[in-house]
Length: 208
Image (cartoon, rainbow, N blue to C red; front, side):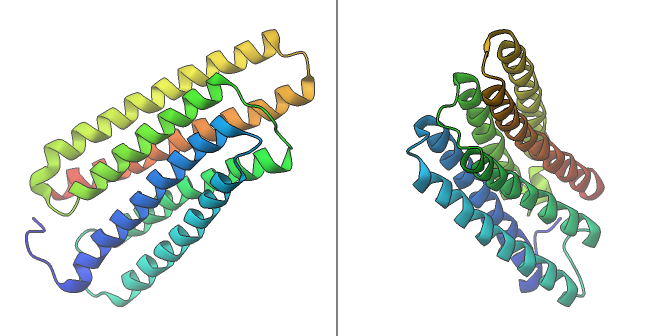
C-alpha cells in the first residue's frame, strides 16, 4: 500500500520526516545543554528555534489536511500523529525554559542519562516515520515501535532512581525541586515518543 500516491499525499510523509528530524536535533541540543549548564545558552536557543520550525510544519500539515480530498492514511491519524510529534518539541522547549527560569547552574548524571534516552527515542521515532510511506515496511516499523516502548520503560526506571537519590541525598530543597522538574520533563519526552509509537502502530495495523 502507498506504493503510488498523488503529490499532495506524498507531502504528508515529507512533512512527518521534517518534523521528526527537528525532534532529533532538539534532543541532541538538550544533551549538549545539560552537559554544559550554565554555559549552554546557545544550545537552548537552538531548541527554541527547532520548536518554532516544528510549529510551522504542524500548521502546514493541518492546512494540507484541510485542502486534500484523498489522504494516504486516516485524516484523524494524520492530525493526531503530527500534533503528538509536536508535543515532543514543546516539551524540549519546556526543559530549556525551566533551566533558565529556575536559574539552574548544575545538573546531574541522571539528567544527562535521561536526555540521552530522549535522543534514542527521538531517533527511533525518526526511523519509524521514515518507513511509514510504505506498508511493506510494517515489520520494521512495529519493531522500532517496540524499541521505543522499551526505551520509555528505561527512562521510567532512571527517573525513579534519580528522584529517590534526590530525596535521600540533596539537602538544598530548592535545588531538589528544580532537578525534579527537569527529570520529569525529560521523562515525559520519552512518554510522548511512546505515544507517537502507539499512533504509528495503529496506523500500521489499520493499513498493512
